[in-house]
Length: 237
Image 1 (cartoon, rainbow, N blue to C red):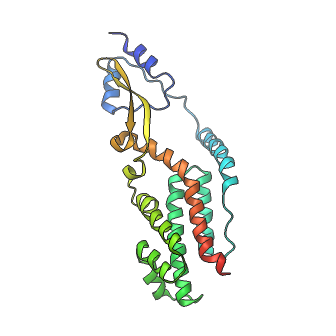
Image 2 (image 1 turned 180 degrees about the vertical axis):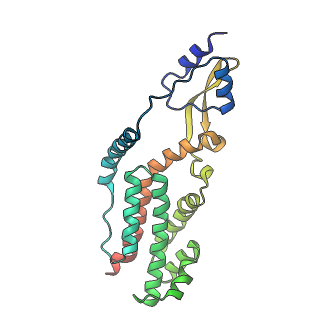
């Protein structure tokens, strides 16, 4: 059997991530396997590197942001700001969840305005605020705030984006992702094979898969939320 250090070094060359149980790591260390730690950094260096990475992402994404709607609803403006900040700092999952919140809040606000005008009634708002999104979409359609096509789009959004993200149904979110050409290693026999790992069947890749899905999806979700807001409010001004 070849030297375990040489074997692991050769097989892991070029890898971006290595996943193992703590027990396996401990057993390997007892056998003399050396795990190199990254050079230590000061807090300032860590923060500086983090911000430099985020700046690269921010410069790419900021040009694709939709314009804030020209409406006098401060809460919606604050939500836009939070979503933008999350995207700029690479917090794509949070941005998607907040975009779902933006859609739901906008629909509820539009219903309240349709029913009661611009007057604010605490008890009436409590009734609207505590309702489920499905019934809110249905009433928005009944009140002609949205048409048939938009109702269908919102129902699809609820089922495929809003519910999975707000309930963190990570298996559902990542069901179409496959980690390809993953090296599976048996450290006892020093046997390695290259396999594909569907995220739906492999909880160990859920976190990596979700980051990929979030990054690819976030701008489309934000643009959809923005379209709903403008559809509900700008056309009525």
